Length: 475
Image (cartoon, rainbow, N blue to C red; front, side):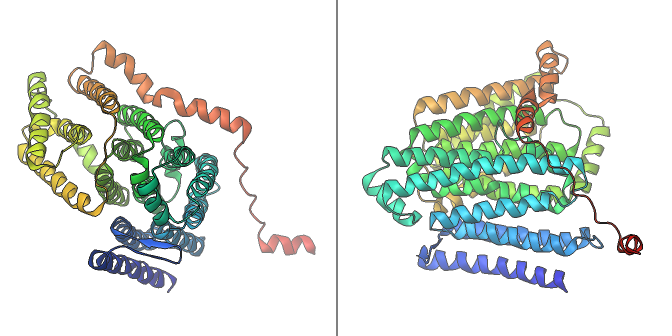
């Protein structure tokens, strides 16, 4: 009965999200009583409601017969409710409380199998990172509220449009960026996200498909103010770019499908945050939605994904020639950028860079002769970008050309290394790079050692003795 009620509530949340989005599209943004609903919030609320409903249904089958089934259900409901409150909050203290609450309930879900040392380690590392993020978030709220004399996001955005972003508010935005980087598992405190596989699979799906995206959502909300905070944008771009390059290279060395998916989430969160740093919040929203749907499916269908990957690895592979790769690398990005410029979808240098990155991602498909699939992905991306640009205001803003150039150089170097791995796996540079990439460049090990020396992992709780032995001892 409890599961049926939970499924009905999750389905009701999905329908409520759809109704809220329809109301915003019909009547415009709605604000009041510390809450705020706009098109961005409506889209993500519908997404969270749908993913939550799927996870509740999956959990019913997955956890059937578990001793802590009801506790799991309560924590899952509280987590989804807290996420929904983050999406609807206008008052910054309410947003901070909901975001912190999301982290606390998720922490208990990650410790569902508390008797497992690996589960306790991952949850503890997540707890330490989250508390640092919470401190940065509360300081950001204090600075922003002091700068504008209000804690209403609506009023703050209106004031910033007239008065600009003073130095105190820029300092608050830097701390907000730090919060998002920590919450989105960016370098160097990313290791917890790789190690949460000891949690139940639906918890992994909830984390990777929903909770970890909240940093991107909050920064999209603050995009008009970030446009005038260059220090915050440079910090966001630097950390996100480093994370994208490192996580993408590490992901290519992983044999475990679940671990590869975890590293993929770290890299994709980096891409999402990088798009915001380059003044492309609409593209970041598209990335958020697509990544959430993909990761929810990937984790909940992990068995099928593993079987398909094993079949691909056992099948004889014919690698495209270096000449075909080089030709595809020249033609495909140029074609995507030209199409975007002709359609008016890539109006800024940063947007053109995003189009070129999409083209580079399609190079393996084109080099293998799968031109229809590559064209379909490109068309879908342009269609999604058009919708996201209509939803997000502003859809883009200008950033320094030097920042775009540095990011472009880093991503091009990453693609060159990936091409070398695919085409020349025995090359000297690949052999030297492989052990470092396989070890995650040893960032997490060094950071974890320093943190755990100061804050060690709590011991496992001692289980209570059976009632029969207690009564026998009393006699």
